[in-house]
Length: 141
Image 1 (cartoon, rainbow, N blue to C red):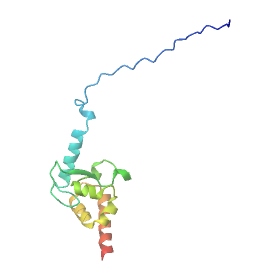
Image 2 (image 1 turned 45 degrees about the vertical axis):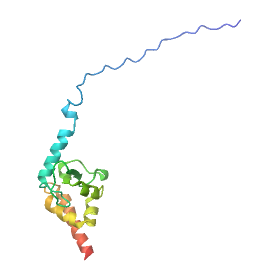
Image 3 (image 1 turned 90 degrees about the vertical axis):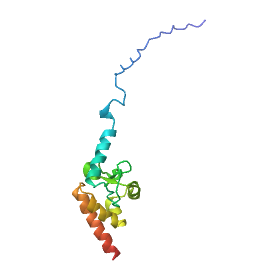
Image 4 (image 1 turned 90 degrees about the horizontal axis):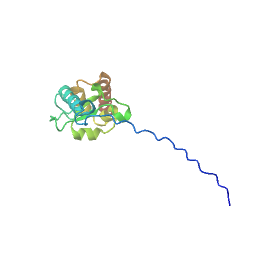
């Protein structure tokens, strides 16, 4: 007969479940819902751009206008008022994630409209647009 040692079971303490914090439903928490803030930013961009697309100068309705980051987020741009402009969906897709210099060199007409209609952008972006448009027209001549 084999002598077995009796197994000693040691009960391990289980982690207590975290107390569920009572939170209001997300539709009631205005600070976590970006909708009103985004609409306010879009409204300000539309006002600053004269309700026109800054690239093709087409008149924009609030519902169809899009916000464009002049210096794209993919290249380190910020979501700041000096970097946001109102654009039509077609021009926003055309620009994609190109840097402003690339876009204005490729489409100088967009740069000319940008210089005219983008009134509240950072001055360095306007300077970049002027330089790119003048280089594009100099290369074309």
